[in-house]
Image (cartoon, rainbow, N blue to C red):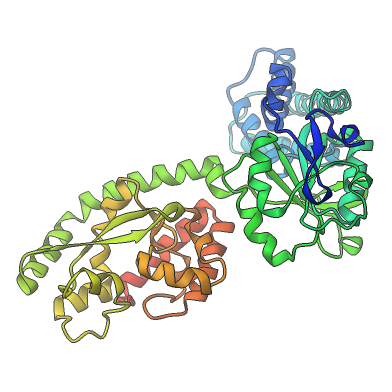
Length: 477
């Protein structure tokens, strides 16, 4: 009976009645034709380019300003979500947006014409844009049909784990098996206590418990995880799902009270059951690479421009406290790895133990005028620009803490270690919201995790601007 559920891997009986599968020793991607291995957005972009350029050839010769209209079209499609991953694509659903983009292109051309940038007659431009819109609709319709055909015939299906072997999870797994055009192949369930009396009642095998999720994803080459309602509390599932952050896997959630949940365009649905697609972890996106580029450029520029200020700070520290201008301290950074952070010395600790375990020196009597000013103005943090340049830190991120306090906070502060999913920062969301110095660790961890989950380049820019205003206003701590 077990083998009937396997759809590929070998099955055998495991402990507690589970049906265990032998790990796949291949990547399902490798079984697809090479023309189907790129992300869906790539093929849709190719289809749109063919439609636009094909019509351009009909209206030969091409006009230079056509590039402006092509940019308007592609950017508008991206904003409307016409390139985002979806379980099902319908031309009738997308047609209003395709037509609206065609109107936007026509409006752009008329606006350029009114400004004197006229390269052809208005009737000819309108006719070409109507043809472009029609071509987009026809080619996208064909592309959607081709994708459904490839899914039904097993050429374009994604290995899928269903978390939660309850009523909803079973219904979703059965639906995915009955409708291969959705593109998801349920290879098994993940649950500690499935709500069925006999494992053979499951439409797919029970592969393991929640703690084995990351292992199962890697060994069975899983590409999609659907989170239904299982035996684990939702609050506990958060940590389990965060183990997927560094894995190339998409996560779909069944929302609570989904029976009365309105399905928006940004959501997927499986035959009436809405699914929320979890945003990809920030460090798996192309924008995260831009963040690193920004870190390198800004830190190098700041080191160059602020070198006179840093020289004055160094002289002042040397005058007040003698030798030892730079203070080095071990902090915990990305993935819990230690690194050595650099600061201008505010005071000399008695020994390394005091440096590692003394929580705050803000009210220390040994703190001199120079040290107090450097801390209040945050100028003591400037040497960390070198940490940023060499990759230990980022400009924006959770502030790094010392190992002694990380060990103290981890067992008592919910999701404290989760803030180490990204590099530590010179400044962060918690700091610009006043959580510096002797403030709530629980709030800091909450703000840091909020920043990670909602990260964007624009968000980093806002934090940097607010940091500058606070430093100028000398509101440090």
